Image 1 (spheres, rainbow, N blue to C red):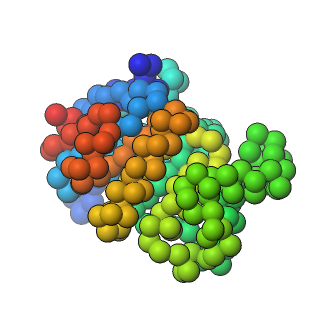
Image 2 (cartoon, helix red, strand yellow):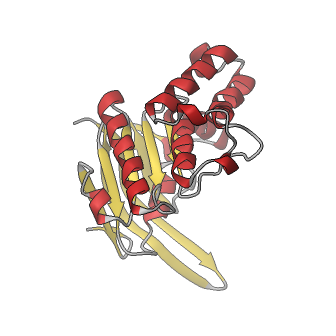
Amino acid sequence: MKALISVRNLNKTFSGNGIELHVLKGINLEIYEGEVAAIMGPSGVGKSTLLHIIGTLDMPTSGDVFYEDRDISSLDENALSGFRNRTIGFIFQFHHLLPEFTAVENIMMPAMISQGSRGQGVKGSSYGEIKEKAERLLKELDVYERRNHKPGELSGGEQQRIAAARALILEPKIVFADEPTGNLDTQTGDELFNLLIDLNRKKGITFLIVTHNDALASKCGRIIRILDGRVV
């Protein structure tokens, strides 16, 4: 498989009160196009930190991140923001849906913001086309009937499905998911995870998922284990 993302000698250190905490130590790895990979390891070993750096939400102390041979760790904030919007989707443990908007409006939001900042939405789409795309995603994630409900009217599983649809609205090549089932019961979490796997199979979207759940990780094509800040 072709490497979509390559990480080279990545280090991350947090400093404060005269103390340095070395969270990531010389990480080298590749994420391949079209795969579903899980990141696992004990709490506090740097799983989420690694995910956030690869996903351009944080910067490494040293080392490089390449996306299709392009060094994205050297981009300025404007270029990085544009790259992130065009290429990456995020699903977090907490859904972060806007409470005053309906499910379909929350899904549309990234595309509408993109439309406002660049003069166009999803590949030049109009408002109606963006809404139509959002409704297709609602159907694919089996929450179409909840499209006009606000987050407070949805179950935890439904909220996370809406968050997943929002992550997909700009057609990212890769989705980073940080404990996406962490706040869900076992059955609901399993259903959501199966939906992500199904999206990978149908659309070829690459997924990199942080999880503590061995059963869910076993459904991924590859498990990346982190221990003491290193890939083992």
